[in-house]
Length: 267
Image (cartoon, rainbow, N blue to C red; front, side, top):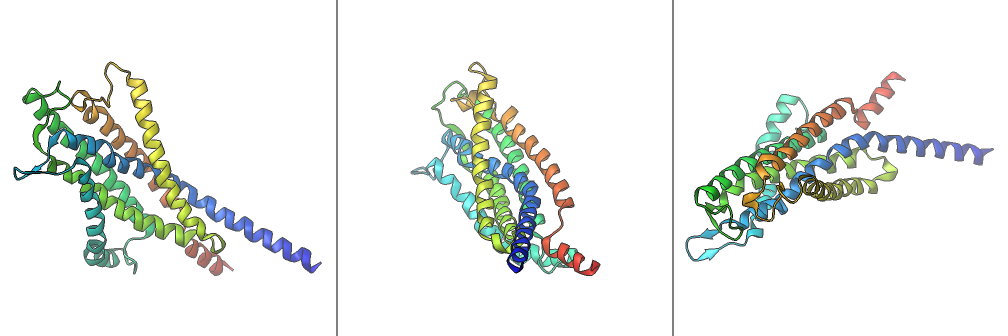
């Protein structure tokens, strides 16, 4: 009889742990879109850089792929900036000793991803205007006389967003995963990132198939494509919709320790 009782309690615990994980899935799903935006900086933005003037002084030309160094630099700079300036203000305003909560960190990252796509679209408009004004729109190998450092803002913005996402997602999954399933927290974080990359590939393939070979949004010759007109704005629009869904899920979500405290008070 004792063995049967022990088996019953263990099963109930397992069910409760699974319920805790299921509660996190809507938050997890709404973080995928961020990584879809982030991967654009590794692909399309680097392709943009290959068409621009990458010279420092007259003798040295930086590789297009090295532009991602600004994204990494932004991540490294955002963390101490948050600790030194944002966190103290957030503690006072929000009356939270942690500063921003994990969900607020994640939401900030999603907002910054939208701003990065808006910045990317606006800079692409400027790049294409230079290409057309200098008669280089039909030449895919031509170098547009526009400094590649115009791309730095979009790298910096999405890098700052990535920093907030790292802090928010890791803290959220580590805090909210059941004690017996802590190893799953890193799996949830990495799976959202990998699915974001997958969704990016799926989105590019779908856009190219729908727009067809005549007027593709993402053309081999970027000067003839519609990156700013459609694709970047499409990503920004999808990110806004995703943010609204995230805000609804975050408002509904109750942190595990708060829920346990309320249950204890109720008893």
